[in-house]
Length: 284
Ligand code: AMP
Ligand code: FE
Ligand code: FE
Ligand code: ZN
Image 1 (cartoon, rainbow, N blue to C red):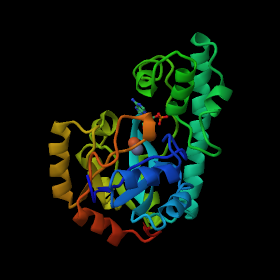
Image 2: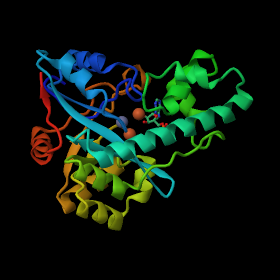
Image 3: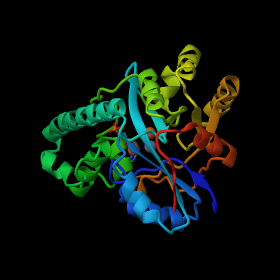
Image 4: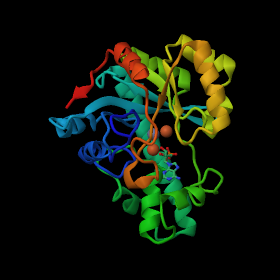
């Protein structure tokens, strides 16, 4: 969609398959006007994306996708325009990344009992230094070893949460995630709130609590939100005066999601820009 605003994309700093510079090139190719770089629990890709966007006619919105958890459900909270050096946010994202690392190692140990050529070193070969490590990297190793044809197949079998090898990783509750993002000058938006996990745990009272803590929006146009959920989420957004976004959640070749497949309207984008004080978009 030419001129579109797509506020949710991943790079090799987490589980995307392209570097931040490659993401910027792909966003330009897709004809986007604005792209958000929102790696899981990490902000280290921002500067590389900014550098690549210089003179490209593309605006890069810095953000992250914070991992949170409630009643064993994984809830992702996008944080736009946070201060990347905010001590509270830095400490918590470091803790989450460390937790994710030991959790991935533990899953690999369990999987290797039945898939003996899988080793931790194999998995690490599919990550960049300091990357936020997750199941997608284990998937890449399983693909390389010929156990599954691609990431999606791995997620539907060996890596599925009911697949027998799954382990959760520790993360703060969504309320704390929202507070951390707000304290870092950022704008919190719940990612794909219609997905199984958040749909199960984010009931009315909990949503109220998040709004009171400064939740700014809901990501509604996202392929993981089923149509019925979108209608419900739209009503919730109206009731609480939340902004709504639409995004691709691009992961490069790691997922079928294509840049610009969902976009955010300019008015909602303007609200995000007006509310964020921790960092600024890069106008390339
Ligand atoms: P984890 O956070 O380690 O539990 O892994 C979940 C991550 O894997 C999410 O951030 C998704 O981006 C990614 N993911 C989930 N399902 C798939 C899939 N079918 N194919 C590729 N990546 C996926
Ligand atoms: Fe991801
Ligand atoms: Fe997510
Ligand atoms: Zn994402």
